[in-house]
Length: 114
Length: 115
Image 1 (cartoon, each protein chain N blue to C red):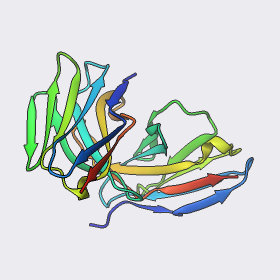
Image 2 (cartoon, helix red, strand yellow):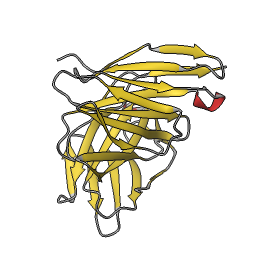
Image 3 (tube, each protein chain N blue to C red):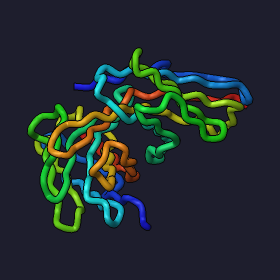
């Protein structure tokens, strides 16, 4: 099976702009989670989607949003970008349904906000 | 919510020595504890995990121990090799409702193995 893919891999934006990132999960996986990774902060949970519904949300402002399509592909959107949004954004897919399901990560999208 | 503390943040060992990374968690309902390895510029990958009904699990040079009473778990790497150099993340899984299980990660340990 192909792994989790994310596009684009790199993005440079300026403050105030908005951005959309895309994630394609492993075939058959219906759960997609998004994380923000910054130096020293580890991976912080943004939200999780399952069957086109947001099931869980982390402690991020409303500027961060997402959605999932019927083929399980997911997008996340960040509006009104701030310098502090510069980070590696990772998505992960899993079979869901159990706490023991491994999450498989994509390569990430490196977002730089100038 | 869950809080996961990870120590140390950096660790340097000589090749062949052992490395130990420790994590504590706050939510006693957490029941699954995976460890991820992230090499420079690469995605995090699961290297070992442990369920709350098990005290120890071993896979070749890697082992994980769990103390549910104290709410801490540790990663042990023996006979370290240069290719073990990476950032290691511990995580704890807790039920968040609506069928969702959330992973909360520690802030990572940068392990450097010196040849």
